[in-house]
Image 1 (cartoon, rainbow, N blue to C red):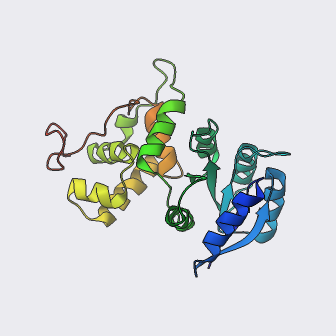
Image 2: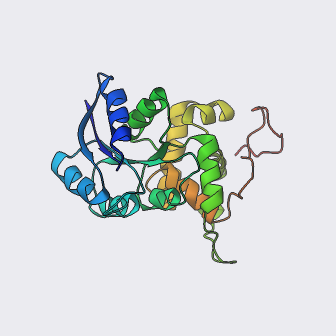
Length: 234
């Protein structure tokens, strides 16, 4: 059973999410909080698998709560709630330790998928929304200060990172590269270790911040995937 704590200052939103999640036999909402401070205490008490965290709340906002939960090395996966216009703080929350984010008006199937995905250790990278968010709020380094990502990654790992930045899932990357998903997972694990980042979200952020991937740039996809034939096949 995957346990969930809901954190939002609007009771109506908490009620709606609770109803949708509790309809699933493998999901259970075990607690609710109306601000970040209460969320910290509740998470420490209940040790949930997932925390659904709003950002704009009284007493303590979700951004500070995410930072403190990450500093406390909580085992809970944090899924940030945001509005459709892409809250400007979500990018910082991802950098501070959130596993992904979810729109508040997400349909039930997306909510359920998101909770299950982060509980299973995955990062929630919704392609179109995530790319818009990161491209809008990424802080570019000063000239000459970007880490040399290509120097530490193999050619294949660079290709995988570009595809990750394009929002592709492991299955989609496997199809593009004509390899098995297990092989893709191996490449992802290795590039995460080399970059010194925790998950796919932070790898994508590193790719944008370093200049390895440019805002607005389409991912470089290998020959045979239906895109340009100039991509390298290491």
